[in-house]
Length: 542
Image (cartoon, rainbow, N blue to C red; front, side, top):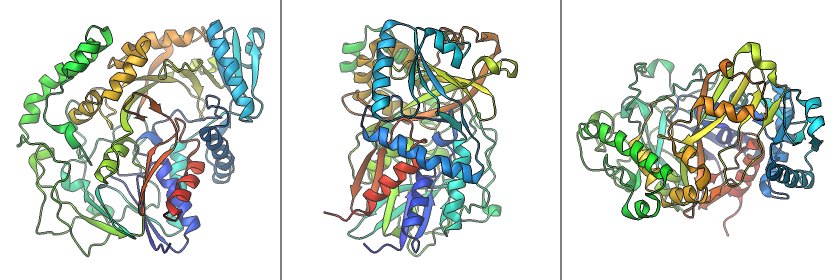
């Protein structure tokens, strides 16, 4: 396979790790990373708890368990050599009931088979030797579980890509793929052309980009961003909506209503979404168009351009009704490549469908709130103390985490997101909400996890109720010391049957390889996953 030009779509930790792996394996190839954000790790990778997971919850002998182990083996020497904060603090899962104790014993058996070093069960009296404030009937302890700074790790990986001759093109949204026999042509547009860009105002980080990483254009040409963003309605550029953007009305459908309409959690979701939909109808209709973007919009190709993210002159424009500011949006050819790999995270299903691949698994976004504890009370735990994973309540896990700087975080408090890239408290995206509520797999998942569906469907779970859950196994936690912290959005892959997909899945079409889902602790395994994905991409076609 002759490869001289390679593109990676997505500048999260996995996309950058893949780009780095490509520069190692293909030293003579030109590697370019595209992202519609203005920096690396703008979304999931920059909004994590920092836990370097040891794989306690992975099935014995599974590929995910092997990726977690391999990921740590690669991660530790890398962060040590780069001076990235890394602290082995240990992880303690605490059982409160006999049922939870039984699950802990099952996890312990799997952990031993997965060769997690030092893992052991702790009886009630032994818990306090590890965590003096922990209370429970049984504990599972992994002494080598650590915390690190994954955003800093992503930046260090990006620096390696730059040093090897690679390039980063930010503020550029990939919108389409032309897959040919031995190459792939990328189409896209500059975010500045669409009008307004995205809201990257998450509640963590300072928004700085990677030092020394080129965005492919002079800093002086980047348009100043409007800091006064409407928190209630902010229509971001979208790679692919498909049939999800037919208008402001989000309809649950008679079938779903007949099946679940009598349940409280369904009523809560229905009332919340329909009230917000009605409130935003006038805003939507006032944007200068009533027709939705089609699955295959007319595209104006622009030949002979350099891949630099700059706006260039073009005689053709693609008119997209229902988009920001009612402006024409210019799509152009970003380049033709011998190999393309996408790691789009929250937009993985939309990009896959735009490339002509299956729409499944779908991405259902879940918002994860993290709380912080006053400095005076950070000593309440020494490392990581968490609840026992419950397969019937996959988003009910919660933990107290001492970060790399000694701070104490509580989380995640997880619920269905009202936007794939919405971090502000009142963020709402009609297309994203429509994508979730029209997906029957989501409702099947909700039905299968009925006992937790209500808390998972509410737009906000109270901070006090969340803290009370944590106080069951750490009674010394003072609720008055807890304040709001950062918020992240998790890309959860889900099947049409409502099954959560927490494994590595890749789709391949010619010279195009698309990462469709990754393990839950993908940041920990990023360097190992990069090896696997590049193996898949470079494998000769059968």
